[in-house]
Length: 57
Image (cartoon, rainbow, N blue to C red; front, side, top):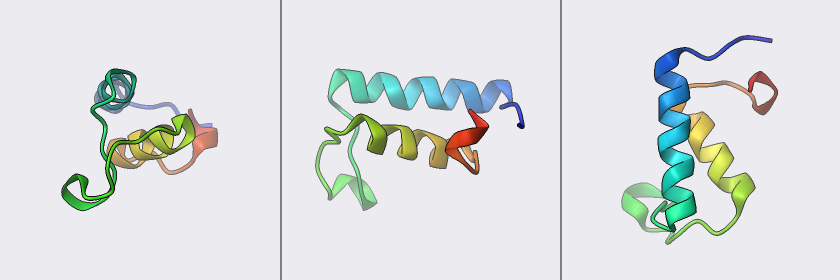
């Protein structure tokens, strides 16, 4: 298992915080609306942080 860098951890925390506040949006420029599913929020966070797999966390 690979460890995340400090920048990746910070990005994941930021995205999950947005999800908890209800301001995380999906799709290009938020066209998909607010994210309501926690698993989708996790996928977005990992993608934005550049982590390859959920198993890496």
